[in-house]
Amino acid sequence: MVATIKDVAVKAGVSLGTVSKVINGDPSVSDKRRERVMATIAALGYSPNSIAQNLRTANSKTISVLLANITNPFQMALAKGIEEVAVAHSYNLTISATNEQSAKELESLAMFERNRSEGIIICSTGKTKEKICSLIEKNIPVVMVDRFVPGIPCDYVGDDFSHAIDIALQHLQALGHNRIGIIHGDMNTYHGEYRHGLVLSQMRKLGLSQDKDLHKTGPYTYEQGEQAFRELLAMSVPPTAILAVNNVLCAGAIHAANQSGVTIPDDVSLILINENNFMWDIVSPGITMVTQSPLTIGRRAANIIFERLRNKEKTAFTATLLAPTLVTRESTRSL
Image 1 (cartoon, one colour):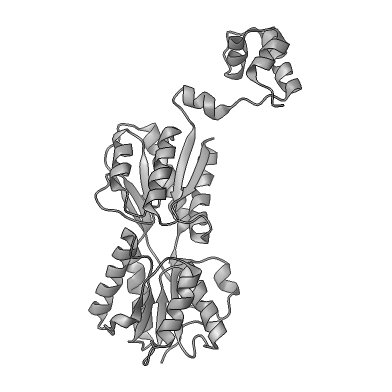
Image 2 (spheres, one colour):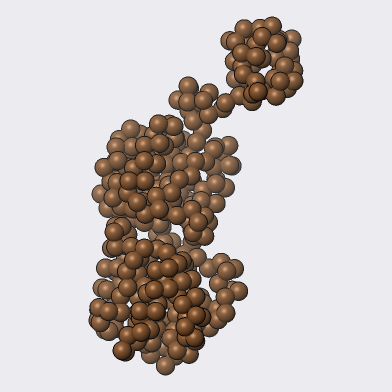
């Protein structure tokens, strides 16, 4: 049976108030009583509920993080960056995920508010603007990460995705590719639709093929990457190169290629926009990519939260875009 604060008070022969004062470091308690209470706490194995204590004092010492998918390595690297900063400030971290569902996002944001999170970092579906704005109006610092959503008055940290698309398409074009297939993300999210538009715009500007069948949209899943790759290669005139806009979609595409006997890059070149981590070094052939920086995004977002907690009068919001770079490996070739 778990010991309670009442058990400690009874065994130590003091009031509940005295136990509470000892737990909270109140200097008014005599050394003798403090030692007796601490000895009793140790003997009973009592563990104070720090979250409940902090809620009573309106200080949860908690930063909350809303990710898109906690199984995605990019998202977890982002969370790791946030955690590093939170731990350095002796704060707890609460993590939830939307799974690209706006209803789940609303539910998580409501939970963060109930638990009195002192700051919230959000990778949003883009469909909960009203709720996010209501949290900001209650003076809860909010930082949007990875996915920019217009009309929300808060700080933002992410990669320069527009530039990343430019780099990827220009790399393929320089290798002689004009007919490029794109494995897009979820058009039911704001960022999926926005990034889809960026790709179309840049392809028009570069004079690349405008065949609408070269564009495959769907959820950010391994299965979608597989399906999109198979559909692109089954076209009467298939693309000579494919751009996957995230890591999970690319992994599905690689699996489909292996299962179908398609050789990368001999049959089709493949390029990815994602974090450059060890996983892409052990894949054969090595995957050419335009880099993203989730760990840095997480660190910077958390630092902004703590800066706003220190300086509550600060009103000007910042937008930080991290510059992508091209890492050339064996998955792309010239025609």
